[in-house]
Length: 316
Image (tube, rainbow, N blue to C red):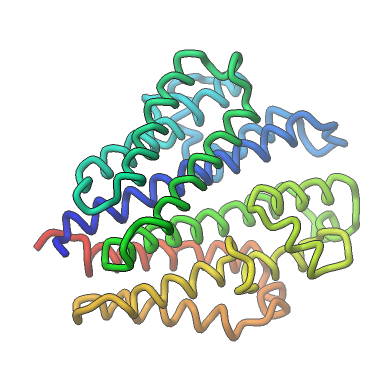
């Protein structure tokens, strides 16, 4: 497969996954902002969390100055001038899909094109008329529909593998960043994330729901959500679809199935990352410090993404 084609397929799926992840992030921040804050900041502070997670705080301040709820929501949802907005991500995904229409199925193209047309209509209505929670659910639903169309219609060839690869690289990075941000928000002191307070409970429950893992948590654990259990679930459980371990296993298997020798650096990094997660117990992570461990692992995912780019996607 030509590197340009592989790149468009890879980034098409990354941008779609990024749009879904942003919707999940906004949904949890918006929901928590509406609840009593119990001395742990205010609702506006909650809405600003996506700025910190995505590193766009400076961009926002340059354009809007002080934090404002309506501006924050529009900035991440429908702002065409913000390359990190859901609107921009869906536009970039549609452009990549258009470039490779011959390598994806009609069902996939029709889904992503219809999504782009719909969000343009939503942008004309505005979030105040459409509704924030409804918008986030719509983004997740469109992403699920595209993923279903992909699974149900495309051949299991290299095109399918690069689409899946983009999804799991993006998902792994998002899970790490969301967990780190919520750990920091749950309290500055270690006790604040394990003492069973209402604030900590809602923080962890919101994170689990944002990653569609609340039902998995209640099936595995009996205790109220806390730092230890949530971290173990989202980092080390291979049977939880949006966990870091599940993403790592998928990436390792996909890279191992790609032909040729150019990908060996990326394959080696993926295998090392998967082995580290496979053999690291949660106690060792907590002993090092969850925040320290997460901030150490985030660059590894970025490094793997760079290796994939240089091995498969960079034009010769």
